[in-house]
Image (cartoon, rainbow, N blue to C red):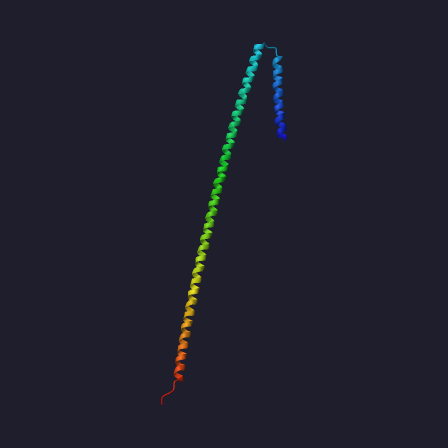
Length: 146
């Protein structure tokens, strides 16, 4: 709100300044030609002043835009770098997880193979025990020849 008040106040100041200058020039004790030359010179000086101020403002805006672009570029570069770091960390975690998973699978295979070997040995031992028991039973039940 104060910006609007300052802007319109400044515009009124300039308008008053221009009117005051015009009234002062009209009532000045100079000849018409001198007065017109003074008015033309003042108009040229005002035009030149406005051109200079416009050029300076354009240079300042250009500088600010360049700084803004540079800052945005820096932020984008840092963001890309951070994203790259996060991707690398993610890959490391996945690789570690994969290595652990492979280790667990190998352990599981080893346990299964060990248990399969034990079960196979137990089955073979049971088969041999059954055969020896049935062989003894068969020889015990045969009649003896006298």
